[in-house]
Length: 125
Image (cartoon, rainbow, N blue to C red):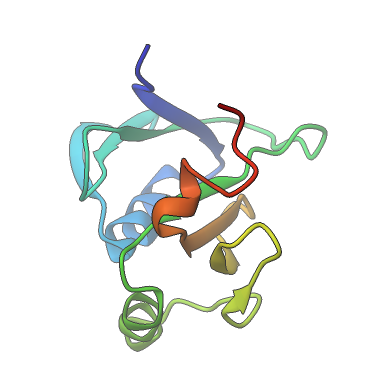
């Protein structure tokens, strides 16, 4: 089984499109204002956004984007005007990450984990 895509809700799809393009995703389906899909810059996963009339905070999805060089990526995104909620920090699960939100307040974590993403020391054999 392979993950195809993750879809999130948005009140303003056009505003979200600009945000995710700034993060580096490539727009591949444009059915705005109701739906758009992006190709992630690495791998085969896609990411989509669909229009909603109301957002719910009941069950938020956290979006994780992995990068090879977190500091360089964060510096580049800050130069493009992206605002982060935290500073880069080392986590006890051996990932280095930073947090932000998209225009609809969906939480995003940009991180680097290297081999620890799939093979942490506590992995079950």
